[in-house]
Length: 315
Length: 235
Image (cartoon, rainbow over all chains, first blue to last red; front, top):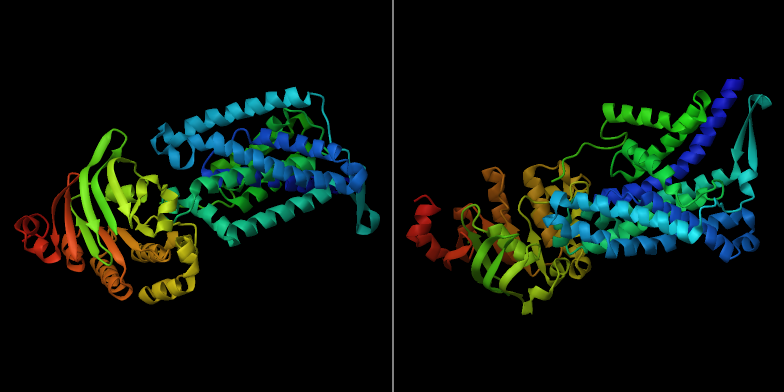
């Protein structure tokens, strides 16, 4: 009975944390899916998003204004437009030089250049973060992060604690993923992004401004991951190097779900959360991430296209 | 409508077009024929802006295209149906057509254009929710042509629409093109390796060889020309 309780507790923690991971993965996957860019700076953009949420919370006095319940969520959502602009500009002035319509004459379709550029961006964001924000861990004050709902099962024999901060964070994450999926499947802009992902040249022939589509995608992808970071920022003390801890989880989640699949990336991230938390029941905490990679390798061996990925020929 | 003067274009250090001049008048159906590697696709890409022009001039309805980026040329009324179809495979047939209607004119005329293309290619109505990547070659070519028409173009450019298709399917496509030209009065520029079929549908033609215009003339002149008969028509 005690073991079952432990498992349910870990499962619940994994699902809630996994929803946050899923949201991060969706941001990364959007950029890869549309632009075929492997963004090594993605974790660091998330870090900037976490600091943006932190400073928005403090500067606007959201704690006093909205209370420490809703305040951190509003701060996380407000970090999105800030990071959208940052991502948009990064694409406009830097990444666009090695992606999209200009890569035809670059070696390896610009992949080497993209690698070096995004790694460089990552280093600049980390070091810049340290200069601007310092290296003392901070977190967004939230009263919910120490509040839990108690769910009783089997007439009170089983009690599962649901952390309220994480639960509301998961709700926001699922809502954003749903909105994004609606945007890319239903709206004309979303369809243009998918068209540009399928075939850049044909998209140009249709009169689709592919460079603009890529700027939107990069801004959107960075903003989405920033919100995920902002949501975690109230229950996870962070420093300018926090990106390193998450970028690996993000890549694992995106590959698990199937490269380029937006919904798949969410499920991939969710699964990573569950594996990570459940493995803590069996393994010492230091080995938490080992279980992620064990499952990751298994998927790569057995189903290289990812759990939800399709094997498809690109024309 | 389209005037090209002394066009030089190519990839990297390799010149492909070495001084091509041609013109397409309002309402004309013009074919460019020639062997593989003559520069036919490069010519189309230069018009669409995905290959850089080295020298020479391309004017479309009086506008010099040099100053117009590739993504704006469709909005001027140029529809490019590329070689190998180049559909958006993960989008449905309907979504592919919607993408064709990305131009202002295409959005305005969407309902009318959709009715027309579904009348010309009825099979697309049946396949509207199918992913374009899963269609047969002939159906994909129909989507590619319909997608071009969905932009309400002034000029429809078709690059090897018969490529990889069974003769009967290719013939169906050529018949539709002739019908579209007749019924809609649309100006068409066609690039083809199937010289006989291309010259049959077109008013005028150019023979492109090794990056230069080797011959030009009306449909009847070219079909009578000994060089064309020997080299391309097998007579």
